[in-house]
Amino acid sequence: MRSKNASVTTVMIAMFLLINAGCTAVQQDNAATHNAIVAANEQFMIAFKSGDATAMAALYTEDAQLLPPNSDLVSGKQAVQVFWTTVFDMGIETAALETSEVEGVGDTAYEVGKYTLFIAGEQVADSGKYVVIWKRVNGQWKLYRDIWNTSVPAQPQS
Image (cartoon, rainbow, N blue to C red; front, side, top):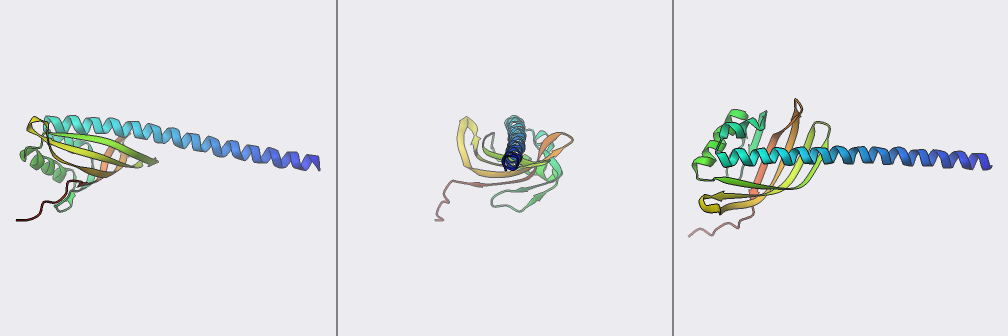
């Protein structure tokens, strides 16, 4: 009887260790994904500040889609570039991104965060929240689906 209990205990310990090892690997992968996406967001903010719509578009997948507020769906890298050119033409000069959450599996991840947009003189033009689906393409994380919406209350119409 003692031998049977010892075997059951050994199997349970082995299962616990395997499950724990798997969880640790997932946590390490998510930490690496989180760090890579935060770094990609730094590149996004640098390109934004320089007003470089070509550099902005390079951060997106070829089949990217933007889902901006008060606008139609924007599809494809070329359309993304045109969209960001329009944003820069409106006088938006800087974007600040703050990542709240990243979760990834394989070559796909999602990010939840907050943004603030600034015009001349560091005046806040808009702030809100966003969700991005990221895809790893040739070893680099790129924006695949990008949706954001304002947290600024709507102004009543006069």
